[in-house]
Length: 313
Image (cartoon, rainbow, N blue to C red; front, top):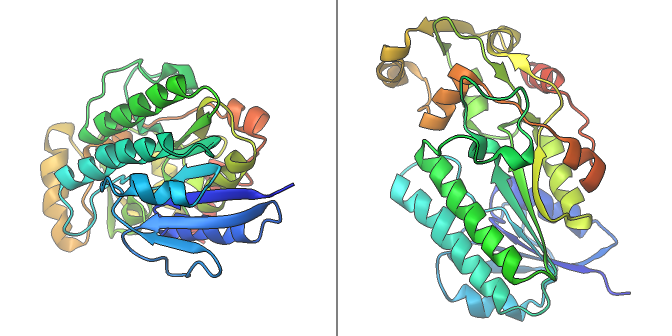
């Protein structure tokens, strides 16, 4: 029988390139195509790279030509990069997803769509459940710009899934990632000279190790399920313990001055903290990974504490 044919958006990113390498070595995958505005650091040897903007309607003609059966949507911006405005981030996230799904509608060969989404859809709330299950995504209002972006992406995704019941659509909701290679808000925060915290708060933090994040993505390609699936390392860790493990000094700040103070601290090397990340530092968040383990069939190798310890080492 012929092998899988997979298209990866955001192929120029670390995760996109790593996923392409992993799938190229998979005997069940015949063809890997990447789509991005920047080429991957590791060129797609013997495969296809489509240099295009996800927001450009031209992808509706480019993607069907690849005759792929699986699309992995990896190009969701979690924080604006250098020179990127929040408006551009919104356009890539929402308009890009809209154009991608429009292209998928024109591709009769597609049978699976996997989106690398975000557990940020749940928010960080003082009265949150101990672990968010997938059906609790709308329990609280969408308070930040990124949450609203993720909400729009999931609405587009759900609409597509209803209109195309023959396509298995998997929404992976990732907790913040940590690891020795990734550049994320968590890793930048833990590498800063000081770690600002909210005075009187020590929230439970849950992360996913970069290797488990990639492993879950590969597993979802091979064993997709309909709907949302949480992706995280088991367990949680207190923020104060996380900071101690990496050898940083906590800097407790009162809530009313936290945002102003952290902006001032950028002069000594503190990274910019998004609204979502500041709420995470105050209230934390944890998700239930039962679907990931029992339906996708992927059990993470790292717990949250061991992922932090490995990063610290």
